[in-house]
Length: 372
Image (cartoon, rainbow, N blue to C red; front, side, top):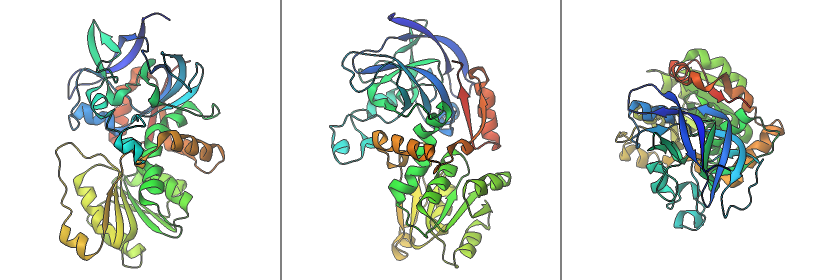
């Protein structure tokens, strides 16, 4: 293949500005890298955090971290992947050899930490350029693009029967939400769970809670029109977010509070509400990404006296090579109704409209779909 190809890509040039769809130069995959033709990419709040400035990242940046597509070419030394493979993209690649990988926490891999936050491949350089200047890959991916070059470790093969929009969501929202339930919280059958946030991650947590046999699944959100969607996905109750939220959850759980609360928004005030809504001896799982530099008041005196457990859940405590195919199999077997998460699809040139719709709260998850 040619050393340089052209690709349409959604690029953020400066904080607070809209994304612009531009034609970038994309270098061929180097050793250990893969060229993927993107078929679908989810519209997630994490990308918006770069636009708003809540997350700091080198700019200009190609956004998009929830993607799926087909492998077009592999670089030298790549094994286990072939041209034509259908893949879901993993934004937390793992080396397999560092301390965290060897302690079953590949999503915390220290080898890839610096390049991922630097927006580069493992060699410290991006594969995108515009007029000869670097354009950085958000989460090592930058998959709001017709094509992307990524580390081979970012590609997880899936059954080709899984539709690309569903495969894209498995790569972030579903893994984060279902993983927070199955991997981090390890919820037991018959439990009560309160999920704060009815977006893609929160609704995925509802699906995960239903899968575990949770007896009471309460969804909390400011957007009351999402109540029916939550109930359709398996929630037993919907509680509007507000001053009466904690009391309403307690009333639904014998006056105690939920066994487990999951924060899927990424706001300190919501994290604090999750602590209050969990029963004594309960577990609070923080799955949403709060703005960099923010702080949350989680009083130690209360945590100690009520024996509450607070857990962080990064990417659903994922082991993507193991978990993505498992989630895909649950979807294919009819046990995870992932298509219900997708409210609307857009072409790439409507990327800013897709984000406006996300911010309005009218969607669970939107997906950018690329023409074949």
